Image 1 (cartoon, rainbow, N blue to C red):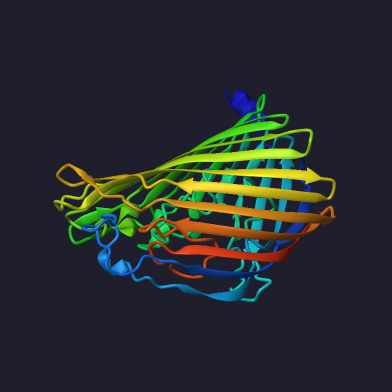
Image 2: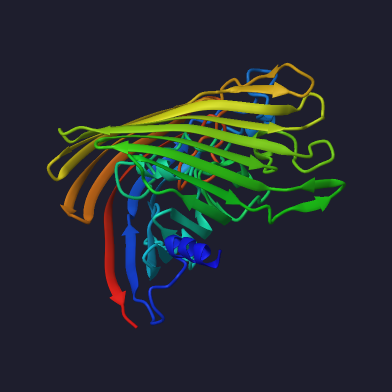
Length: 422
């Protein structure tokens, strides 16, 4: 029996190659993409609209302020970052893997928090990899690559992974925070464990779970926030497709979308779900077409009669890129539909004016293999009750407000590697 266990342990890689210290492979990498633009938000719905006079049931009359966000010049950093990652080879079939990544702000607007981005430690082998830490959920992963440039910028997808209502396009948090970020599905999630399968015949998968560390009991209600996320990928040559699913328990996302406050005796639990289908095809002519289709569903067990207990909406986003030598042109279009809502006690609730459209167009020139100069124009057009916003945004967009801007930027990436010997 002991011999059999030793054979299994050797195959899994848990027996070291030798008693001597092993070498460590290390990479230091980074992405910088400052963007200087001129932007404004205007055309918001004037005061006077309400759910009874043509507005949406989830938007109170007081939200229709008609307020604009004045025209300004600004600089943003997108997903600029710097990090270090490495691996320690323990045996033929086992490595210890680790990464520490931090956001950086070439514009100087935000604090540079050490390990504020994807940071984890784990094990890897022929059987895949498993790790603990704070990391982009499997659901978020494919969306990051439906962009014209490396990294994520202001003019990229603003209508999927979030339901509008000024919910942020992306969030970094360890669990439920009782704020707008609870409703987004573009998440870098803390308190997480993930497993990634190896690739087999073009197929691979990822699953992730974020613990219910924030479990609480108050006012007679036990709240147990937890998250599960999964992704299946197929890639073959110039074609790829992905399906992602994510589920949030007791995050009370609907509370951020006009529903009742969460974690109360009359609204004791919730389930938020997201489904996405992502596909792309790259042609030999230098053209690439990518698309995302998505459905978000927010539900609570609310018992307050007349309150919204369920909201669901569909959205899509498509990107067309054409590269000609060092030049690239792109255009993108997305639409979030108004969706449908249900009330406690039966019957539908009005979702009038909750739809939005986004489009952008741009050009980039490859200065070097790791550097580009680029320019872009973008717009987000909200219907009279919608509040979809950009990442990073100007601030809270009033219902019906349209955001538009244009600017120029530079992208630079690097990845330096070396081996540390004992």
